[in-house]
Amino acid sequence: MRKIDPKQLDKNVFSAIGDQWMLITAGTVDHCNTMTASWGGLGVIWNAPSATCYIRPQRYTKEFVDREEYFTLAFFGEESRKALQLCGSKSGRDIDKVKECGFTVKATDCGAPYFEEAELVIVCRKRFVQPMDPDNIPQDVKDRFYAAKDYHVMYIGEIVEVLVR
Image 1 (cartoon, rainbow, N blue to C red):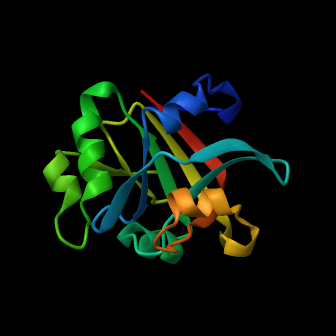
Image 2: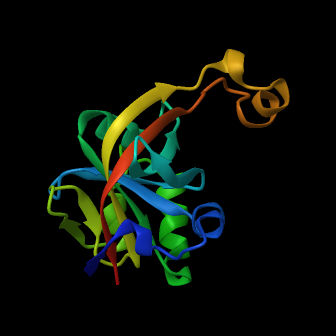
C-alpha cells in the first residue's frame, strides 16, 4: 500500500461508509478486534482532517478503541462483503474474526492494526470520545435505532495517515 495525503481522497464517503461499509479496528498486530460499521463521516475539525465513527457500548471493539491511542478505518471491495457481514454479526469475544475472514494483519507506522486486503485504510489518532446523550436525540430516532437504549459512543479521530492500494 502507498501513503497519500488525506486531501487526495476521492471516494464518495456516503457510499463508502453507508453502502459498502468499513471496518473499525484497534489493538495491536498480535491482538486486535474489528467490527463492521456503516455510520460515520470524514471532515475537518480543529484544522485537521478527521473521521468520526460510532460504536455501541456492548461491542467488543469498543474496549480496544477505548484503550488505544490509534484506530483504523478500512474499506474493501465487493469481494469482501461476506467477511464484512461476519465482522458485523459475530463478536470477537466468541470467534477469531481475523482468522475466519482470512485477513492479514499489518501495522501502520504508529502501530495501529489494519488489514492488507483493504483497498483504503484511514489511520486515526483518537482525539475525542463522547457518549450520545439520549436527551438530545429525537424520539423518532430513539424509537427506530435505540429500542434497547444502547446509545452509541462517538469517536473523533484525527487522520494521521491514509493508505491506498
